[in-house]
Length: 468
Image (cartoon, rainbow, N blue to C red; front, top):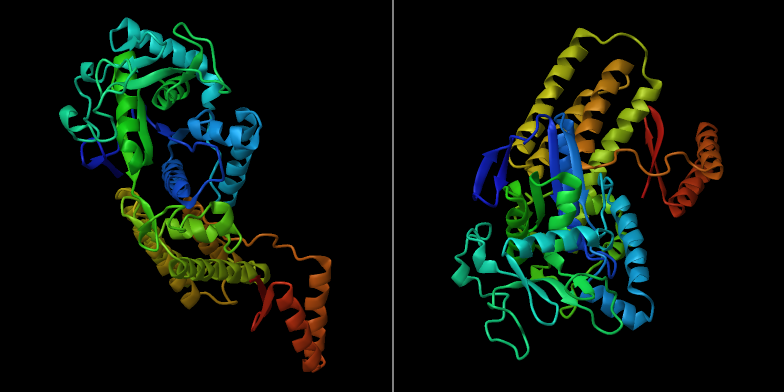
């Protein structure tokens, strides 16, 4: 298995620090509002990476935090006149609901920044003792960026070229030694949450939070650190500086970053009017379609979101789910006989698509090519299976589809598969109407079911239905 390492700018063979185990940290959202579709991309991408690692037999310790103290959360709390912890708690729950809708597995740990303050104070104290940080007269603690000799190694920029994102003009009253120094601890302001520290009552800077949470839940050195490419600089660069100076070892062996998501070929922005939350998308599409769309391109390629592309993703997903439903229908009525030689040959041929899927995922998690392999498997199954196949054969083919789609986080069984009694009764009544040649009543029931979101399809194997 090879993955692209942002640090080395090339694909590298994945070799875990500990045999059959993977320690992976993914930067999570700042919880001041509903998550947007830009937040969704890394969630879906790295959940899929985790799923494939587990499929390959690794035990994955997957940690993804919630940033629950931040300027945006504080602004929201002032705006709504409620405590900032209430804002954070509410939107953590909303985020978890959206993640569930996208079939994102809960992390091994979802640490909250506010619950790890003691560890942050401890790491900051260590950095001060080692000369990598200093407390200014107002209680602000800064990191001495230039003291860390490897600063810039992830973003591949010389430290003197890293003025972007930093103020080069000294602001009156600012007590930095150098314009590139960044904040580890900041003094409280009126109305803001704060914690006691040796330097002042205040709160941590953003970067120190992830360094400390990664260390606590995964250890000083981890296998994979991941997130959106917007985090490479300064967030991940600063994490490296903090963690490696404090712990004395390499922070992460591999760095993975997904590319940006644009909307209608433009950067997503509220001012432009092309900003969408996951909750808004869920009003129009099943979030499985959003997940399928996100995986339709390689994670390192920029992805453009549009209504047309979402409709294409919805149609592609329906092809797969419909094929799976057809096999389940055949399984129910299939004979219990042993597999024939011909069926064994069919299963051997079908296994080629699993190998193709694995080759795509082994090549830096190329989900676009992996989805192509799934479509090829679906086409093969649709062409070759029938009601004459044995239950064993059909179950093996369904299991193969289910396994591959499970790695992608795609659910093959439609929601609420058990029909309500009223709908079951209508389908049964329609079947009786057809048998007695009362086609007017059969058509009437079809229309009633369609209004309820149920589409009926008459096949040689009987009536099949799906939600629309």
